[in-house]
Image 1: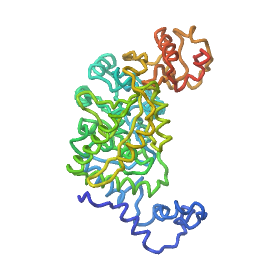
Image 2: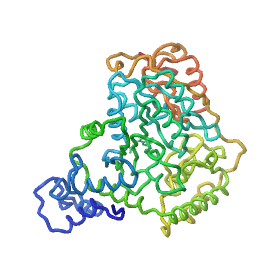
Image 3: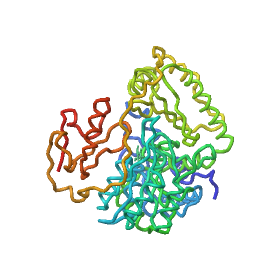
Image 4: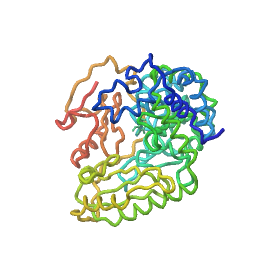
Length: 476
Ligand SMILES: Cc1ncc(COP(=O)(O)O)c(C=O)c1O
């Protein structure tokens, strides 16, 4: 197949060039009804916002240009089948989990996962076995799970029907996914991978290996995060003998809109073409630009550019750690004041996502470095400014009350000090490291209480646990 082709985009553009009379949805009629004040932005793009017309195929039953575009994607990744997703990795995670596990079946799940993973398990009515990730003290965050943890989990729960992992983590860290996949496959356990942040990994040797290459059975990628695709655009790759393709397809049909956006799908076609034509020279050019940029940032006072252990990680992700009295959030704000908008911050770090540049593409690094200098000029460097959070390794655990049985239970607030031994009724997710310290349905240990207190004292923020500031926690 010719990877330079963009069948869906090309067909859509050809349709736009014909003068057609629209007596079909959408109601904006190729942008003609858009009010003048908004048309400056919308009019051009809405010319491509068609629907399932003759020749434009149907995402839910593809046999024409959408099928061809998906086949090109599958060929690029060397998988049995690939799908375009129009509701992000979120819908991919829901669909693949529901296809892999049924009610009351066990699924091994990396504790520091995206909420869509837990929602998928909840919808499936499955039983999550939580796997504690490894911790990176220098960065102050959680990375991936170890082969040893997975091996122990399989020994404890040999009836687990699947495992779901996050690879890479938000900060671009990778781990021995191949070792885990080998182990799981020996036991007949399919490996589902949320590769939301790694859609570009097959672009070349300058990136870590992709989950599909490492043995992932079902892999979900947010094309919109690192490829030139529109927000919500994602891919699901199917490369397994463990799970029926029809099951995945039926959940995708159930969970996705019956009116998927054509501009969005065309952008997925364009993003695949961009990735497929990314050359070795592009990779060398990109790495040179990233190194140049990091070298310049490294010279600034008040921040430290972090490096991956053994250099293994995603070069597109650049983590800057505060080396001043300011937190990551405060540094992020200073940068915004100079027009630099970053991906995210935590108490120690600020995370940047570098563009996947091809050879000759410009990015105003000189101007950006000047803006960095201006933003950070007043900072003084400290030797150890990193906030020391309580990073305790969490092992393998199971919920006391499974998610499915929590729906009808009543919850109430109790003082944190009296909560030991009770069953938690909310998520407690401290940042950093962003790993749920407690899940709803999990027993609260005295150790978790001490950890929450320590985290509060050191200024961590929490997702969930909105009453912790008043010293209270919700229990069943
Ligand atoms: C690890 C991970 N998985 C899944 C998602 C959801 O992806 P999307 O926004 O494409 O639905 C995110 C979003 O940030 C994520 O970080």
